Amino acid sequence: MGCYANIPTNINGIPYLRTSNTTVGTATVDLALGSYRRPLPPVGYFTVRIADSIPTGTTPTLPVTLTRNGTTRALTLFDGTAVTVADLIGGTGVFLVFNDAENGILQLMSRTVV
Image 1 (tube, helix red, strand yellow):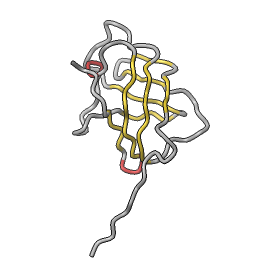
Image 2 (tube, helix red, strand yellow):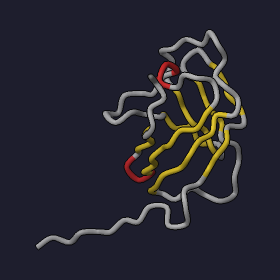
Image 3 (cartoon, helix red, strand yellow):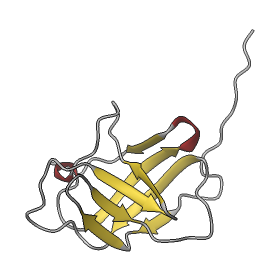
Image 4 (cartoon, one colour):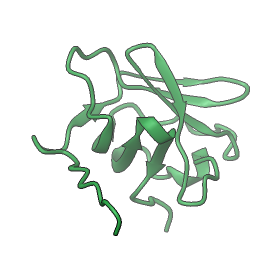
């Protein structure tokens, strides 16, 4: 007989974070989520609002990273493939992310491509 752990996610609601800066580098595009005192749950969802769009003309194949409180992590798709600028089309908007810090997962849950 096995033991099944019940891992609750977002007991107190889904955090809503806004980008405070978008930095286009030669290797990545970083969406900074600012500095917040309240930590994200180690396992759960959060919503990101891109307040300042990725500049037009940015290389569409650049991978996207998220930085929060000095920690930068790669944003991925379901299969672990890096999210690229091409996946986040449309300027500003909102997307959902699943975070599992213990297992190194930071996964885009809502696709923005048409």
